[in-house]
Image (cartoon, helix red, strand yellow):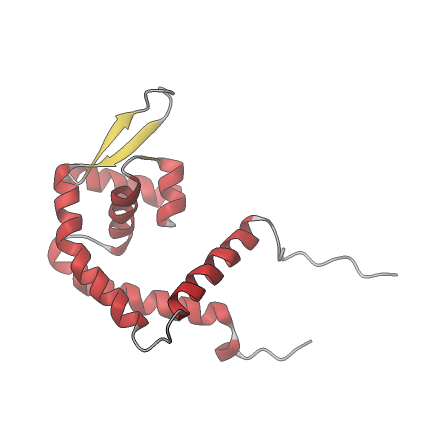
Length: 155
């Protein structure tokens, strides 16, 4: 078995970066009455305009039960609305309200500054390569590569 070196583990660093950004993001969102998961919902809806709960759960990386509570709170605050799907009445779509879009516009500059600070000092093209790498890793995991089950040993 190969030695495990935490600091050489890619997912250790991904977790460290996300946790550090979420801490700084919480500070930026504090004055707006928003938490990081709500920001992810708001940003996803701003980008897509209409999403089903399943689509939003995937985009915002929030489990369904937490997402339901988050969406309820955001609807009560007037930041999003639930819409019936014209093609399938069983599906509810979520969309940002005008107040939700205004909130996004107020917060986005601070988030963009935070993102820029996180990428400061990276060589030219590194952010694009990182984005490509993470997208590829996501695809690999969705495709079922790297299963935690191990093949049975040969007798």
